[in-house]
Length: 86
Image 1 (cartoon, rainbow, N blue to C red):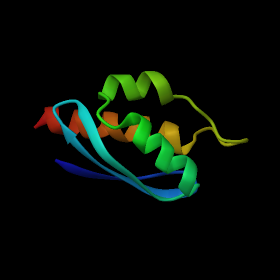
Image 2 (cartoon, rainbow, N blue to C red; image 1 turned 30 degrees about the vertical axis):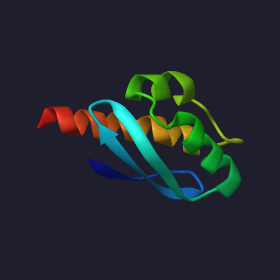
Image 3 (cartoon, rainbow, N blue to C red; image 1 turned 135 degrees about the vertical axis):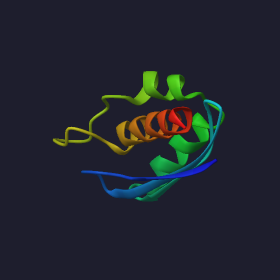
């Protein structure tokens, strides 16, 4: 299933990815630090929701209480929970 997450308090405006079971692929950040976010997407290709949360949840950016990486962790959890609630 393709999923789009609207971010909050970061430069990227949304995150798009595919979720199959608990595996995340095809991560795309819209906006934000292009090079860094492309690298994050490549490094996390094929990771599970849990692996992404363990690596990224709670990561901050400057004085912000979140980051694009933290928003990805929130996004994959939201997608997983939405799919499994149905």
